Length: 412
Ligand code: CS2
Image 1 (cartoon, protein in one colour):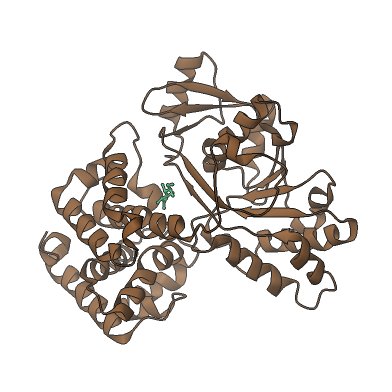
Image 2 (cartoon, rainbow, N blue to C red):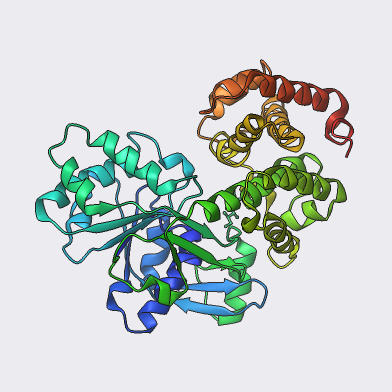
């Protein structure tokens, strides 16, 4: 199998599932990793034969993961089609973050040219997007359809390549010098590619026929429809994360557990999940889901920095907050906490821009120009159609935050 984007999340979340299968004797579980953007992952992993340590934060237990077979930095995605034409290849997975799902991106160019070449050599494939997007597999399939429009190979791709949707979940704080030192003390070796994560891990994939590996045996849940899992995670867990990150940083917090311990933010997250809960059927049990999510956030062992979450908002907020706002407005249901979450994000952008601090976002430049003109100008550049009442309400909440400060404006 092939994985695109061998960052910390892949090493901490998916590779342990493949490790499990490799240990059970499935040779096909050896992962070939490719990195389309950074050279540094290859530089840290190759000298240690692609072995790395996974630390479980609650217990400090360290496990060496050996399922990564090799890693290649691929600066020219179109020249690397031989990775996709390998006749033994059955499964491709990827963690490339939300912003890679754009026409013409290295991901799209790599997969489109790879699939064209594969159409010549043959062999069915399952391509599993593991990024935090609604309908991530559908989105990828649409990008491929667009990229291969007019190609004589598109028909083959349609018939032979599956793009199942999937949901991934494991909180993985970025490695730091401190975590690397802690792990070095524990295992007696310096590991430049070590990763740490909470003990909780979940991976749900839509059934896409036989991907060549018994993923279910490794603890992956295979379902006929992943949308409930995916929507619940994005709209509850990830949305709360973004709210805590943007509000928490403005209130002087640094970590998720600190932010959620702030009763004012706890209440806001609770209110938002009550609103969002109306978008789910009763059996989704959003209340129970949020209770266990909040316990994960409260865990002081995780050390998850708000700063790590507070990036790429122009992509993440659409999926996590704005989509729910639109759905709730259409349903005639209350959405006040979501309006605040949106205004809090815009106020974060405003502060950063006013202080001359960089905005960590693929659209940073347009965002900092827009925010000087107000909330509506920011909303205007997002890939989302918002009702004009909702825009007006976000604008009003943003103005209130500007004049009264965050704590004052939202009656925290
Ligand atoms: C977080 C996610 O950084 C973020 O935006 O919300 O990475 C989150 O930790 C994972 O999705 C949890 O599975």
